Structure formats: C-alpha cells, structure tokens
Image 1 (tube, rainbow, N blue to C red):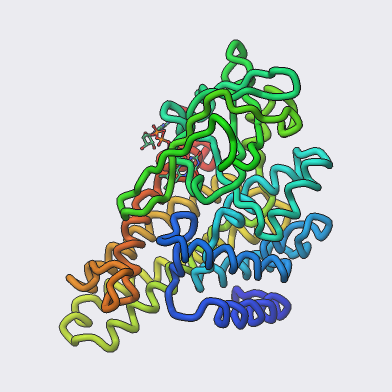
Image 2: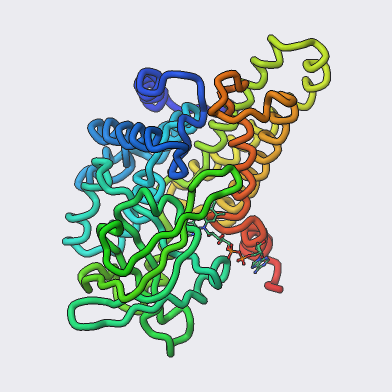
Length: 393
Ligand SMILES: Cc1cc2nc3c(=O)[nH]c(=O)nc-3n(C[C@H](O)[C@H](O)[C@H](O)COP(=O)(O)OP(=O)(O)OC[C@H]3O[C@@H](n4cnc5c(N)ncnc54)[C@H](O)[C@@H]3O)c2cc1C
C-alpha cells in the first residue's frame, strides 16, 4: 500500500512551498511564533504575512467561495496546513481563532448580517480574534462559567472575568461565552457573544499573563459593565453552549504540528551529522526513535483527514491525535535541548544560539500543549468512553 496525495494536491504543495520559501526566508520552524509573538516586529510581520495570504485566498482555503475561501477539499487544506506547519508560517489569531473557531461557528450559526460583517474581515487578515471561554473557576468544566450578561434595551451588559485569553492583547475582536440565565441548568443558561473593537471598549481591561518562556502570550480579561449590542448575539439567547461546542467540519488532523516537529527533527539530524562524533554516537538511536514516532503521528493525522474527506466525523480519533502530537512534541523538544547541551539553552535573542535558539522556546511552549484545547486527561476520558465504550467514572 502506498499512502500519498494525488497530483492535484502535490502541485498545490509545490505552489505553497515556493510561496513560503520566498515569504519566510531562513530555516526557523517557529518564525516568530504565533499569538505569543516574541516582539512587536514579529507580530507586524505575522500580520503582513496573513495579508499576503489573504490576497491569494489562502487564509481560509477550505471555506466556501462566497465567504472568501477557495472551496478547497480537506486534502488540499491538509497540504496547506502541512506546509504552513513545516515552514512555521506565523499567525496573529486570524487563522487560529478566526478561521479555526469563530469563522466556522458563524458559517453554521451566524445570521446573514454577521456573516457579511465578520467573515470577509477574517479572510482578508484584517480582524484578529481571541477566545473568551475559560474563567478562573471554569476550565475543563467550562459550563460552570460565571461571567454574567444581562439584557438592557438593545445591549447586553457584561460583568465578570475571563482568563488564559491567548493573544487578547493583539486582538481587536473577541468571541465569548457568558451566562444569561443563572437559574437555568448550567449548560442551558449560556449565550455566545461577539465583542467588537476590544481595545476601545469601555469597562474592558486586559492584564498580561507572562508564560514560562517569558513571553506575554495570554491575559486576564475583566468586564465591568461592558455594553455589547444585542445584534452581536450568535444563535439564540441561552443556547450558546451548543453554538460554542459546534462540531467544526474543517480540517482537524493536527497535521501542521506533526510537520513542524518533522522540521525540528531534520534540523537536529543535520546538526548531529556535522557535530562531534561522541554526540552523534550518544544520540543516533534516540533521534531515530523520534523520527519513527513522528511518522506514526503523521498517519494518525492522515486518518482524521481521510475520515473528514469521506464524510465521517472524527471523534475520539481527534483525541488520539491531540494526545499523541502534544506528548511527542514534549519528547522531541526535551531531546533537542539535551542533545544540544549547554548551547542548546540559548534563546533566540542570542546570535550564536544553535538552531536560531528555537529549541528552549519550543521546549517550554510544548509544556502547556497537554493542557490547552482540552487537557490530555479529558481527551483520555473521551477515548475511554466514546472510543472504547467504557462506562463513565
Ligand atoms: C497555553 C494556553 C493557552 C490557552 N488559551 C486559551 C484561550 O485563548 N481562551 C480560553 O478561553 N482558554 C484558554 N486556555 C485555557 C484552557 O482551555 C484551560 O487551561 C483548560 O481547559 C484546562 O482548564 P483549567 O486550566 O481550569 O484546569 P482544570 O480544568 O482545573 O484542570 C486541572 C487538572 O485536573 C484535570 N481534570 C479536570 N477535570 C477532569 C476530569 N473530569 N477527569 C480527569 N481529569 C480532570 C485536568 O486534566 C488538569 O490536569 C489556554 C490554556 C493554556 C495552557
């Protein structure tokens, strides 16, 4: 059996690769990171990069043409994600939160006015979105959220707090879940709201949270009588839980992560080939193991793409991919910093840092990968119950 994409996808891959090699010179699979951009310049570069993608219709290729996409197939979208992951295509929150979360939610649950207003501003790279779901007392058990919104005339008035809002300080737009009926059972009293122009919203305050890589990645967000027009409600009032949990029919294989890890392994192998013989001897079988594991990760991702392309909805399979890719990332970056020795601890700011100083950063950023997007414990629960049919608890 030979697993590969068809000629159409491979031709597309060549086109994407040629564009990325020209747009992202250098050999850094991080290319400035995503929402936790190292510097303002990195962020501006990511914004410019997204604008260039937007001109080609490449921000949301799988969206229907009427919403600014190319109507690309799941396989074509996978090729995009694989190449973007391999080349470290930077993002601002436009592709991650805009294309990955709020866009598909609006396509399914938004009204015509909301679709017309927001979708083109995502596919052009103009709007940068952030996600206001988690609260200090609501993470895995998200339906416990307490941020309150009360209808007052044509507005909702919001009071409360969100936390871990990635890229909130870079974003101009936020989608969030708020409690509109505190008396109802907890999943039924939640609504889904869009907040415009968050930087200039009276009563909305962002406080930075600096992560262990010393980057300002996420924020606490405080709401004090923040007024949001009722037209920014998505779907029905008190039915927001179902809007927020929409099963998204877009590419979810995590193949970009696997491709980024593959690039890291290639760079480490190159370093081993040209480095001291003793180090080579010590690390050759370890890196070989990781290359095998990375190949397995790729096929786990392809399985999900195959299911989606053929009209199946991946469920516990996506949990398998999430666990596998996040934990493998932690192993790869741990191996990398150890293999590179003391020099491997140098950060990107150091001109002599091996592999552009990307390893310590990737190592630290891989730690929370088993927490966000649903912790790996929660994913294991999903595999146990939905995948293996084991009873709850
Ligand atoms: C880097 C990063 C970026 C993030 N970005 C955003 C963002 O942009 N917007 C946003 O809204 N949120 C964001 N989050 C928050 C993220 O969604 C939550 O951290 C996550 O859902 C876990 O919630 P918690 O931190 O409250 O931990 P808890 O839910 O309190 O979990 C604590 C521990 O208990 C375990 N646990 C909890 N329940 C169960 C259970 N039923 N069975 C077994 N184990 C369980 C968990 O696995 C974990 O180990 C981000 C988090 C991180 C780390």
